[in-house]
Image 1 (cartoon, helix red, strand yellow):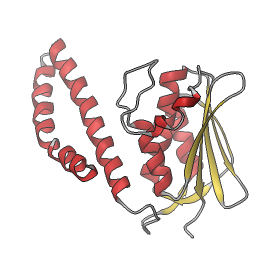
Image 2 (cartoon, rainbow, N blue to C red; image 1 turned 30 degrees about the vertical axis):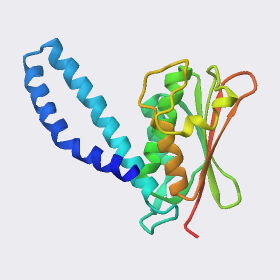
Image 3 (cartoon, rainbow, N blue to C red; image 1 turned 135 degrees about the horizontal axis):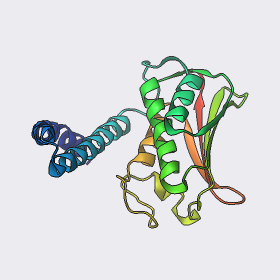
Image 4 (cartoon, rainbow, N blue to C red; image 1 turned 90 degrees about the vertical axis):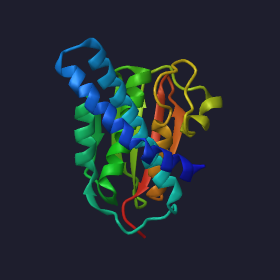
Length: 205
C-alpha cells in the first residue's frame, strides 16, 4: 500500500504541472477563478510532496543511512521560529541530521500549533546531557484529548474540533524523528495546552 501510494503520488506530478501552467495563464488576467485555481494547485502540490516524503521515510530502514551531516540545529530553529513569529529559547546545538527533514519537522510542529492554539507558542531546544537534543513545541491552546494522543501521529487523522488540513503533518514529524533514530511524545500541559517533545541523537552511533 505504501509503495502504491508513493507511485501514485509520483504520477500526479505531470498533470499537476499542466494544471499549474493553465492556472498561471488565468492568473495573468487577474481573474478570481485563476487565483483560486492557483491556490488549490499549491495545496495539492504540498499534499503530494508530503505523501512522497512520508512514503520514502517509511519505506526506508529505520536506521541512519550515512547521509546525515553536522548541522547547526539552533540556526534552523531560529529561522523557523522567526518564520512563524514564535518565541524560541535555545542553547547552541550541532548534530548529525538531515537539515531539510529537520526543518520540515519543526515547521510542521509550529504550523500545527499555530493552527490549533493561536499565537501563544514557545519552542525550546536543549541538550539532555545523554547524547541527544530535545526539541519541544509548547502551546496554550485547548490541548488534545488523551484518547487521541496516539492517533494524532497516524496518516490522515484529523482532530474532530477542526477538520481542515491534510492530516499528514504529525505523521511526517514522527517518521522524521524515527528516521533519525529519535522519538516524539505528546502531553497536555498543566494550565492548558499541548507539548510535543522530540528527542534525537546528537551524532550517529
